Length: 155
Length: 485
Ligand SMILES: [Zn+2]
Ligand SMILES: [Zn+2]
Image (tube, rainbow over the protein chains, first blue to last red):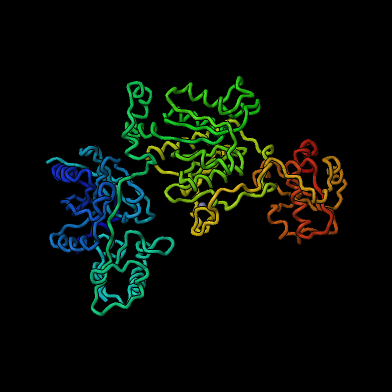
């Protein structure tokens, strides 16, 4: 594996293209009132910057009944994705999911399943429109959770 | 055996994607992995040594995560996959259902009145509707209740029931700010009701001017969303805890004593309860009596307000809750802490083998003062002056202080040995039966209990009680300050 981005000791900066952001928001809104979920891919550039290169919408494997409040990504499904990403130089840098009609803060359930050093993007979708989004990260050092800033760049 | 490590977990394994580990079972392979990558232990296991929630282990497409499968012999040529489970959900913490929230409407006046709530994104219209839909019981319209009730009313809680059997006394006005001088001798619930009505006429107020008992407890809280324990005694606290669990209602607990307050949330989403913390109430003599209690005027306001704040967060469904946690606040030194409380699987009411399945009145009458018991031998004692004289003459004696640590912190008794009543029987060897032993507490009541406890345990040396306790000694201690302290 080339330059593994999760192993950078210095503070990382994140950027994403505005157009990519809009596409992701739209795909999440289409799933409303169900919870959307997926994988965020990125690449490490020089100067400790990670650019978000793409996202992959993944099927919510929870039962129909739970899909308005919960999401699960099947581990074997993730495994099969991992193999394809490695081929084109992208890496999984985190995950996203929506909170239909709820705020973009981590729920207890979210915190429970957070993998340290991965990004977790949460989108608050009220009545089908994304109002807010927050990105969170759990520290590998002490499991403390903090908010991450992502710079949105126009093209 | 071949082990594949998910890209999302490689941080724990020096970036390794694939490795070869000796082992025939999942258990052996996990052991081998953590031996080879010691750093990975922290990533794979929680503090209790269990695999962390997000870890999944698959062998040939089969889930082997559960510890029951870790000893199963794997076929050769298997590949072990170490994968994450990516999952979560939206916060759905409100105790008021969406259906009930949707039935509520807020008019123009409401928009004006609750503007400061509506401005907060986490509360907004939905949160305010939840508050209005909520039905809350406050037990006790004293110091804690004064603050809690008024803030719940001001926040817009739609239905508030106040339970209290007491009348307002002049001595209540020092801390019970829901009552005024004109309310003295009126039932506390009547005065509380008037105050709520003054804040917002549209609130439905139910005043119950009666004492909570084992018989009526469940009926009085049934059908409500939340209970606030604002009482000042253990009997009520256990009754309320038990009733809330049996009725399935979350409970915001608080208590104040002198300069300190406690707050917790019990019975919320299967979390711990009061009995998980203290399985049974302390026996009457072991805690300071009500008259020995007392608290600084604003303490009830501070702690009662935190209680109201916890209640509102549960209703709106936002923020962190004090379930599984106990907040302690020390107003004298301005120190506040949050300590974790574990659910006790042996808890008599919410544990695995419940021994309490209905509310029973335990023998806890006359809490404020020890119960008279004719069978007990009268206890000999010294008055403050007699005791002072013996101290001055340096008569050999052992002085045992049975007070609580916080009481001793305020007024230390020099030369006294500290033994809590609960340890007396066990530690009686520390006493010398050839000389007098004098017991001291704050008011001279707990020391009687201490003496009876020791006698019951078979101690035969001379035992004396300091009559009137340290309270009665105060002047003497202070006038002898140089010599005594
Ligand atoms: Zn979530
Ligand atoms: Zn319990």
